[in-house]
Image (cartoon, rainbow, N blue to C red; front, top):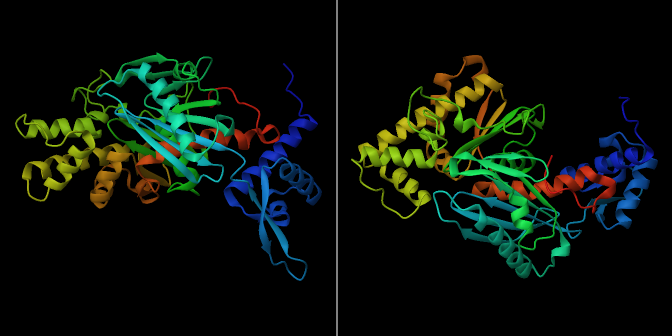
Length: 409
């Protein structure tokens, strides 16, 4: 089959996408600076920017002095052009956040889900109700929404329909986007693995920014990772790459929720850590009503309890070994530790985690790597989910408001 030839429309879309992306990530910029950074001619920049200004996608953002001439007009992406919504479907609840196109948070809602294996049929109604509440808080209509990004546990099979496979919580081929649509949501939907949405958020706005080779690790109840290779997310043949939590750490080890034994998640995921703490306490329940407050209790107890200190020391060792595997396999320049449990452990124990990693990793590879904490906090998955429709907008360029198909490819 002969390769498809680029058309004038393709070139126009590419130029618009290039200029729009540059303004989004680096703006405000003048037309002159846009030309210098993109390599496009002054005439192309002027024509394409003029179209985007006419469309309301780009607006003026003040003036900047030039070298001896008239002040130059600065341009930026119009934050009021439309809004985007990011949804973090976790194992214990759904977090939804509404942003303008400048990624300024306008409103947020949280809804609980019954653990340990939330019924997927509950998620569609929760998202639909949350969307209505968000728009009500911000005084917007659904027509103002450019898209809704949804970060989920497990792997996402992109297709028609989009299916979610989350073996650890009993989801097998769940057509999540269809379930949301059945509840009346009409905005474009984008579904992606939550670790990958967190990874995109950190690469765009957080601790991963500027890195070409990175791993963004997510540790909550479960464990996952996003691998960034030469600036792009590595997805594998069916988009399931990054299931770091289900790499084998101990042959014949602890039972994992996925049905296997010895997985990293069974040792450093919050559920596994707390189960080890309960067993170390002779089977006594950990005080506090939920995983996050129970992990906080464990961390707070380490200064006065030898049992808690031992469990945390073991956890650091397991986590260091797991991170060392990432160092040895992918040779990243940066590893970012995130997720609510990852942040809780890292905030208190990052130096120890670095030391444990160094003791298991190849020396030269480790010396080229930095290990840092996620900068966007525990809502990074929702922020990253909101970037999915933004990414579609930036990629479409010439057809910015054309509805995208309900999945990120």
